[in-house]
Length: 124
Image (tube, rainbow, N blue to C red; front, side):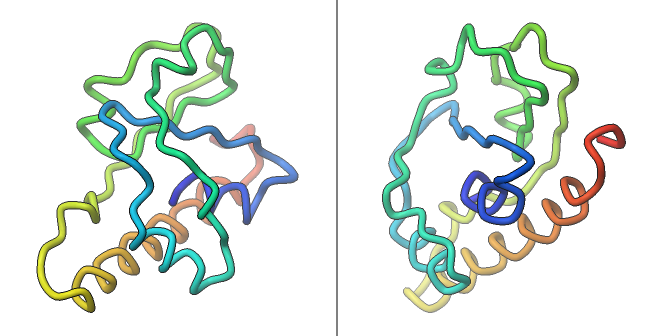
């Protein structure tokens, strides 16, 4: 969701790449709640961070504590930004409750992206 949100909101300023330490596919719940706000991530695929080894990034962003602890080091990055969010894939309950959990995560991530990346790069 974070990759889709950053690309949708600030794709003209940032190039987002998303990878996980234990990729398991893009959740259909994530696809649904992103579509609700006009962001299509249906063609996204789940990638392992190892796919990006050897790539130079300006900033490496981790969005959960587990990733921060296990994410490989990317030499040449101008900086690292860590922000923890609850993993909506851990939500349990009815379909409506799970969708609400994904909506909450989406909205929390979107708000953070707007605050953090809506600023000038120099203030990151």
